[in-house]
Structures are given as structure tokens and as C-alpha cells.
Image (tube, rainbow, N blue to C red; front, side, top):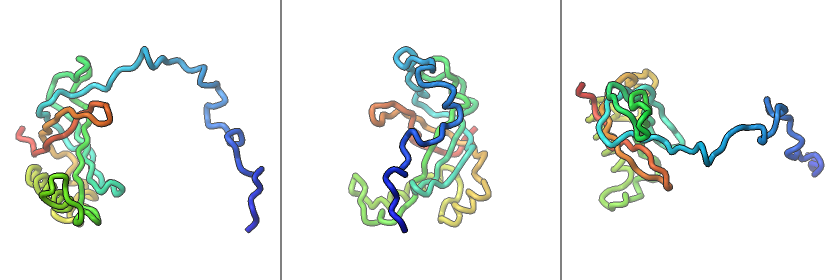
Length: 176
């Protein structure tokens, strides 16, 4: 294998332009961050009706991510104008990963593995679904059996890295 010549290394000026790049520069854009900044609207703390519209396994995070769409609630978010209905909220079921059996939770009462197993049991009991094994979960995801499930979400407001956001405190099968 031959050595690559330093002059063969591409620079920022050697790359072909992206589509639309030849049309102008950043100075041609029209916005003012200071004047137009508006914090994200938040859903007030409370219990809201929702439907599961998407559920997927995220292998890099060892979790099942549920997308819930709020509906039949009425009301508006903290900005006084954005409707609560049709907002989407994500809830994660954290799955045990290798090594969790050797790490204690912050409380020191159990391992992370046991804590995640217990949370999965609580969730499956509240939602009246089966999440007993990885095989059952994989089959349910493949067959999309949980899409369309109605749920009641208890939402709160939390802060992460200086930004406020909605958090799901509890999910249970809808009583509506």
C-alpha cells in the first residue's frame, strides 16, 4: 500500500457543493435569534389521555421507546395557544443490559438489573400487556400489537441541563 500524499487530502474547499449551496451564503438568510426565540411550550402537570402510535426498540439505549399522541383532552400548553391534543410524548421502558447486575441503584436498595425488571413488571401490569421476555417483546414489536393502545399518562415538568421539558411519571391503561 502506498503512502497518501499530503496534497491528496481533501480540504473544506475540495468538496463539491451541497444542493442549494451555490444559491447564496449565510448572509442571505433572514432570521433574528434574539427577536424570534420562544421557549418550547409545556403541557401542564396532570393526567392526559393518549394512544400509542409508535413503539420501537432502541438497541444503543437498551430501551423500548413508546410514542404516545395525546387526544380528547382539550386545553392548551404553557404558551396559551398550542393545543395539548395531537402533542406527542415519548416514554422509555429501560431494559436490563449486561453489567447491570453488578451496579447498585442510587438508593442502594437493588441492582440496576433488578430495578429495570421491577419497572417492566409494573408497566406491563399497569398497561395489561405481556413484556415478560425479550422474545415476547420482539414478537409484539414485530406484530405491532401495542399500536393503538389507549393510555392515561401522568405528566410532570422537569429540568434537564437548564431546559424545562415534560416527563412521563406514570403510564396506565386508559379507563375511558
